[in-house]
Amino acid sequence: MEKAILLNEIKFMELKLHALKAQVEAEKPKIESHTSASLYGLLKGSDDITIEDIEAVKIKGKESV
Image (tube, rainbow, N blue to C red; front, side, top):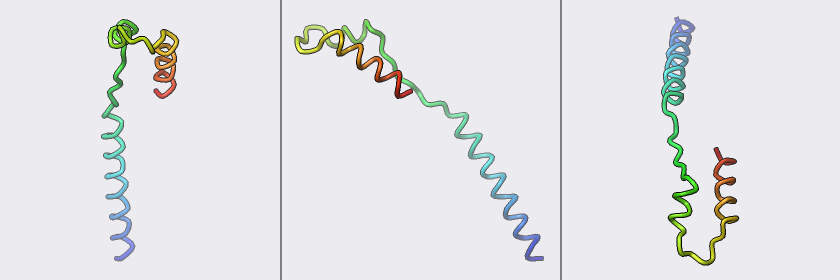
């Protein structure tokens, strides 16, 4: 009898795990991206930011995805 209870508990855990995996896979992370124009607009008038700085940030953002 004890074995049947344990097997049922394992089956329940497996079903719960399957449901949680499906839930995680369904939730796609939102990736916020910026166009070059929006970056240039945000940094307009800033003397200490160069085009190379903006490009470096864009490349770094692609690597993290």
